[in-house]
Length: 130
Image (cartoon, rainbow, N blue to C red; front, side, top):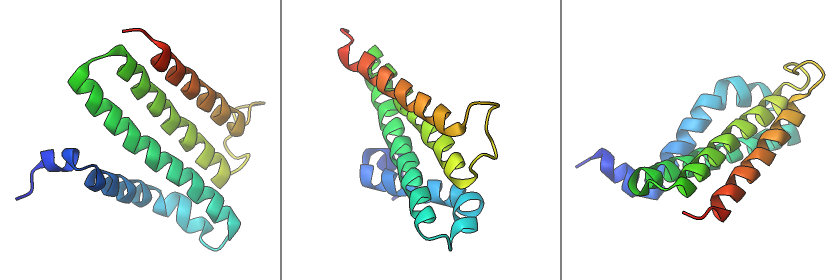
C-alpha cells in the first residue's frame, strides 16, 4: 500500500521523484529549445544535474533538521537552498546568455557569488559548536 512516509524513508524513490520533477519542469523552457545544440545541451544538462542534486540534498537536510532541530543542520539547509538558487541562475545564463544581465553584472557573476555564499554557509555549519 502507498503511504507518503514511504517516499520520505526510501531515498531512492525520493531521488527518482526529484529527478522526474526537475526534468519535467525544465523540459519545455530549457531543454527543448536546445535539443539539437550538441555540447551546449551537455552544458545545460550539467546545470540541471546540479539543480537536481541540490534539491534532493535540500529536502534531506530539511527532513534532518525537522527531526534534530540543530543550528548546524539549519545552516546546511540554507546552504543547499542557496546552491539551488546558484544553479538556477547558472542554467538561465547558460540557456539565454546576456539576455537577463543585471545592469553591469552578468548572471555568471551572480551565480558565482551564490556558489561562494553556499560554501560560506556550509563552512559556518561545519565549524559551528552546538
